[in-house]
Amino acid sequence: MAGYDYDLFVIGGGSGGVRAARVAATLGKRVGIAEEYRFGGTCVIRGCVPKKLYVYASQFPEHFADAAGYGWRVPEASFDWPTLVANKDKEIARLEAIYKSNVDGAGGETFHSRAMLIDRHTIHLLGEDRTVTADQILIATGGRPAPHPALAGHEHCIFSNEAFDLKQLPKAIMIEGGGYIAVEFANIFHGLGVETTLVYRGKEILSRFDMDLRRTLHETMEKKGIRILCHSISEWVRRNPAGRLDVLLSSGKTLTVDQVMLAIGRLPNTENMGLEGVGVELGKTGAIVVDEYSRTNIDNIWAIGDVTHRVQLTPVAIHEAMCFIETAFKNNPTSPDHDTIATAVFSQPEIGIVGLSEDEAVKRFADIEVYRASFRPMRHTLSGRDEKMLMKLVVDAGTRKVLGAHILGPDAGEMAQLLGIPLKAGLTKEDFDRTMAVHPTAAEELVTMYKPNYRVKNGERA
Image (cartoon, rainbow, N blue to C red; front, side, top):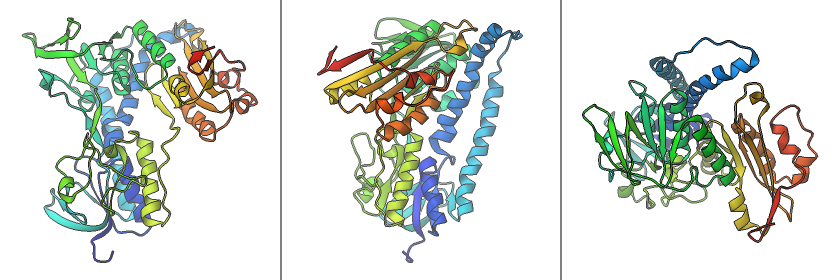
């Protein structure tokens, strides 16, 4: 390794790349990391963090309305979009500085530059027009919103990246897509007072989530005033003489809005990096193909995070980074564990899940039990808000192991994180049953559903 400039060079300064660089540097390794845009990556700069801040902002109208039932008299509120954007920018800048300083402080070297592979040990830093060498190379360049070049008028559309920094809040927006990004932004914009329409080609939003949660969230969103049009796609988008956008849908309907946002998936950032020239194997979507240890087909080049198109979540990228460190620098080959990952959708109400949905469990197990509770959460009793909470446990009737836990309602994401522990540990329904409830809480339902609502044997509901 002494013949190289670095023991490790990381391309991509997001959560996974920064974690790998920082930890490797603390081990005494000579580390360089290049990021062409801003340190922090998708999550910090244009994803999870600003999104959650906007979710909070969009919830205040309901909080103000609910306060009346608790005796509060809240004056008529007004919202200022530029203030939210400016304050978001301050917080993102603070976090970005922390990400960079964490690497610098550990002894790594950071570069604000695009990086390209010249060969398996050589990287060209375009911003500095210099070449460096490294024994090990880690690619953690993440992903980006998928474009829709086939859509006539796609140049008039925005993506999640631009949605955070619009010069002004639109009066009406159409969002195309039915995944968590589309659903979250639909709730954000609606909560901020924007007339919102969600257009999705599938039969129900949030595919791969439990159908009970999908249907209940759909109904709740429509009650709030969000229009959801399933089995529909955009045919074209045109700027009209008034400066607004006309959208023709496959159903024959035409919408007129101020913004069209496309949220139709994400693609890995692997273009123009020299990967093909070096011989790094790519999949059909351009994702880097890796083995169980995140190693590419070239033994000193590795890849983690969204660029590998495995599980596209920030904590997963960080976990993969730590496994990479164990494998590459600690002589302890460790493969990332992608099983039973808790996750959340910051819709309104929230979704929190861990484990198998009912439909997935039915396919894998001959006999399952379903425990289900739907109720009005206590916080809505005095406010009068007509919004239900849903909790569901999916259990293997043979082993009694809890296979899946699904929550729709306030703080569902927080509950999913804690539920991830017992499900990861393989605990049984009896372990849940003998756990004392915390009263009064919504979460107590998870340990007080003693009898199954129904059973599914060999695919047939009993």
